[in-house]
Image (cartoon, rainbow, N blue to C red; front, side, top):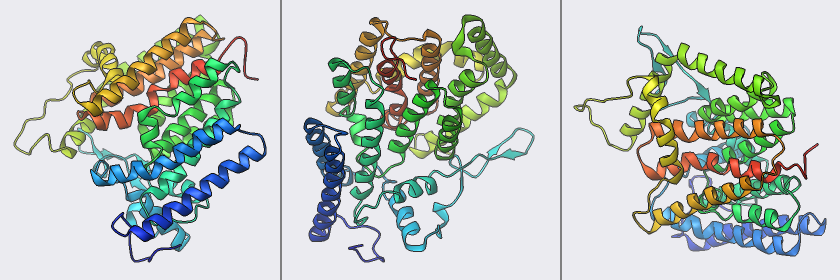
Length: 399
C-alpha cells in the first residue's frame, strides 16, 4: 500500500498521494480490460467505452466528496482496510450487525426480534477479492465496484438477444446516471445491484443452488431486498408459478393469505423503518407525534399510486432531479418498447419479475421520505424488468 496505515484515507488535499493512488488503480483497470480484449471477450469499442467509465470514477468521487453526498462513504473502505491489515475484522462496525437503526425491533408484548446482517463485512470480503493496487482514497472502492459491474455486463452480454438494438440497449443501461453513480463510489449498492441481476438470471435459468447462494448473499448484505427477491425465488422453485395459470394463481393467493395472517406485524415493521428514516434525516423530533400506516389494507390500496410515483421519483424540480427523472422516463419507455415486441418466452415469469420490482419499489417508497435516499434504494430494482426483457426471448431461450 502507498499510504500511512494511521490515515483513514487521503483526499484531494494530499494531491500527490491522491493522484498516484488513482493513477495506479486506473492503470490496473485498463490492464484488466486489456486482458479481456486480448482474449476476444470484448471488442475495441467496448474497451474504450468501459475505459471511459473507469476514468470517470475519480471525477465522480471528487464531486461526491466535495458536496458530502454520501456521509457513510468511508465505512466500507474502513472495513476493507481492517480485513487487509488483520486478515479478519477487528473493528466493531465491520462485524455482524443488526438490521435497522437500533439493535432490535420491539414487539407489542415487550419482546423483541432482530435481523442480523453482514452489510459491511461481506462487501469488504468481496472487495478483497480484487487485488487493486491502492486503497488510499475513497475512489479505490469505486474502481472495484466498476470491475464488478463490468463482470456483470459480460455475464449479461452472453444472454442478451444478439441483435444490434438489444446489445446497444445493454450498453446504454450502464450509463444511466444512477447506475453510473453508485458503481463509481465505495458503497454496497453496486454489489446489491449486481447480485440481484445475477440472481434474476440464475432463477430464470432454473439454477436452484446458485440462486439459493446468491439469495443468501443478498439477504446478508440487505435483508429487505432479499426478502422481496424471495417472492421470485419461492414462486419459481417451490410453487412452479411460472409454469401455468393455475399454479400462478395459487401462488398469488398464498402470498395474499400470508399478508393477511401477518398484517399487524407487517404494518409494525413498515412503520418502524419509516420512523427510523424520518429520524435519520431529522424530519421528526421527540415532541412530535408519529402517525404511521394504520392498516395493511390501506397500504395495498395506495400501492399502485405509490409504485407509479416511485418509478418516476424524484420529480424534475432542479437540474439534478431532472437528470434522474429523465433516467426513470427512459427506463419505462425502453421497457414498454421491449414489451411491445412480445419476444418474451414466459409471460408468467415476466409477471413474477414485475411483482418483485413492484414490491421493491413500493416497500422503499413507503418508508423513505427523502427523494435521493429513495433513489439510492430503488435503483437496484427499477432496471430489472428491462434487463429481464433483454435476456428472455422466444428467439434466444437460455438453456
